[in-house]
Amino acid sequence: MNGQSGASKSHIGGPDGRPADATVARTEDAPFARLKKRSEFLAVAKGARHHESAFTLQALADESRQTPSQEPACRIGLTVTKKTGNSVERNRIRRRLREALRLSGMARGEIATGKARDYVVVARRETLARNFGLLQADLARAFERIERRLATHNSKKAPAQNE
Image 1 (cartoon, rainbow, N blue to C red):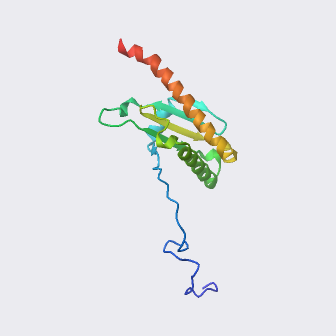
Image 2 (cartoon, rainbow, N blue to C red):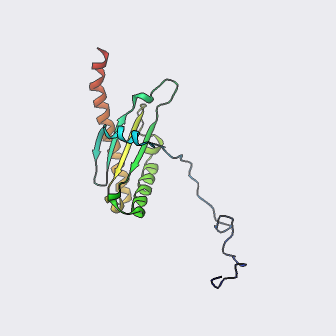
Image 3 (cartoon, helix red, strand yellow):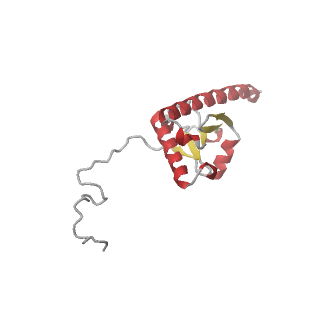
């Protein structure tokens, strides 16, 4: 038995392997609504784009989800291709982006303009090396700029639909 009797495991307190007096920090933030289907990602790829050093943000105004009975929502998808590294690096990139989105409030819809939007963050390898505070600032700036771009695009498009 690898030199262990198996009877004495005093360092493990709880049933989940944590010490008995350990507390688990629970966040009140719900996870953001996600894009899950390939077709949703492909649709967003046809929308507006904003490039940063660590990622590209793609966005699409989704009028099909705007119904009176349904509250418009912001959905976010993350894409990390195999070109960025092995599975460990890709997962680290995803975790960094998810946390940056959560902490900056964008995942909770604080950037919402009352309209349904779909976003895709296409990560680059630089996401790993980027300072986390700068990554958050880059995300916030990208969301602001792409919102302005979508707003001006939709305002130019709106008068043509009324005719």
